[in-house]
Image (cartoon, rainbow, N blue to C red; front, top):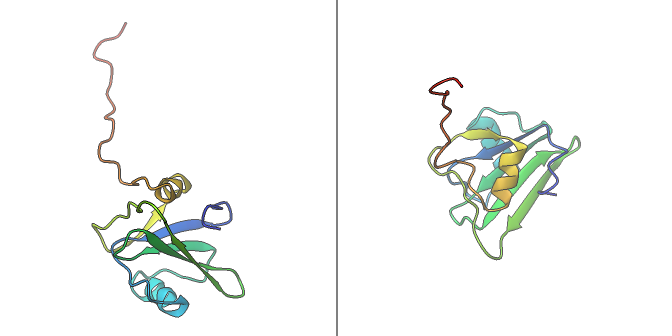
Length: 118
């Protein structure tokens, strides 16, 4: 389910640390109260605790919430910890995250213009 990203309108990750002992009610309240987002949409919300080998996902399915939990056996998620905000990510960034890659590039290629015309 977490790798099937085609069914979601948007994907949000909650940066920083989340207490993964929270259940559906606690996580949906966190989305609504702390981040001012509507949890009753076709949006996947992803949470990560202090241990970066597990994440939880929450999505509204029209008649109730679906909560997903994934624990990696080997490796860790490269979760953004530098801010406490909800961050809208692209499908490509979602794939990178689930593959253990970072979604924050360390160095970007600078665009340049030609120095002389040929």
